[in-house]
Structure formats: C-alpha cells, structure tokens
Length: 189
Image: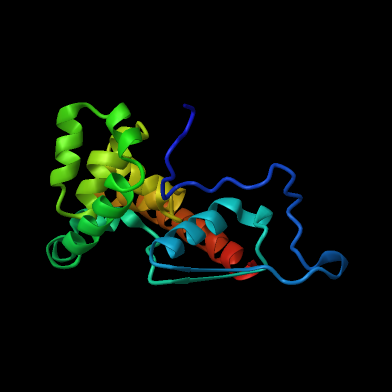
C-alpha cells in the first residue's frame, strides 16, 4: 500500500528549506525538544540538516548521539529493555501495525519478532528486516546524529590499522576538524 514504517533515521523536511532561521520577518523562534527516542531523532535531524536546519534552537534530553554503542550495552538489554520491548510489541507492533509487519516479514521472522526480549532485538527483527537495512549496525548508524562521519571513520581506521604515526596524526587532525564542524553546526542552532 506504499506505506513505509517510521524509523529513527527519518529526517525528512520540506524541500523548500531555504536554510534561514524562523526569526526572519518577525516570525517566532522555533525550538525542538526531544526526550529519549525523540532526542535521538531531534539530534539526527539537526546534525543532518546542518545550516539548512529549520530550528532556531534544539534541546536533546537522554538521547544518544551514536546508537551503535547500544550494540554493546548488555546491562540495558537485561535490565530495562525487556520492559520497553514488551510495551513496544504490545502497543505498536501487535496493537497498531501487525498487518503491515505480517505482510513484509516471513512467518519465522514474525515469530522471532514476537520473541524479542530487548529493543535491540526488536530493532534487529523488525526495523532492519522491514526497512531493508543491511544489519543492525547500518540502522544504528543511520539513526545516529554522528552517522557515519569522517571523524568516526578516521578514529576507527587509525585505531585498527598499524600505519605510521604520520597517518595517525593526519587522521587525528581530520577527526578534530570534523568534530569542530559538528560542534559549530550544533552551536549555531
């Protein structure tokens, strides 16, 4: 039916975005505030919009900038994610979107989704499969404000490679430069 589910990397905005703030012509200031998943989505929007962001201010509370860290956050998977996973499954998946998931997932995939005991498992079983991401890391990269930045690539390649110190210092300065431009975008919002 043409419906695509919402995911944490959705950052669509009007195509007529002129990059101007909202205070031109006496308009009021437009601010965004997000908590938890809302903070993740807000941070992603601001980071990906750059200077074209339609918000004059943004405040993210209790959201992550790099959701790939969730892949190794085992305490949360055991402690609080099972409660959220049950509520998400009961309210959203079974309650509101079951027909859509059943139409896109195989019976085995849907059964795995119903057995998922953490948000990460639901993301893997439902969001990744339903929306054709390569894997959970791909989805978490796309939903993160940090995304797959040059800074992230520089840091991971310099720590995993055994290159000379000149390439390490070169990648360090490039990561500092990328981090500075992200900080500048954030501070301009």
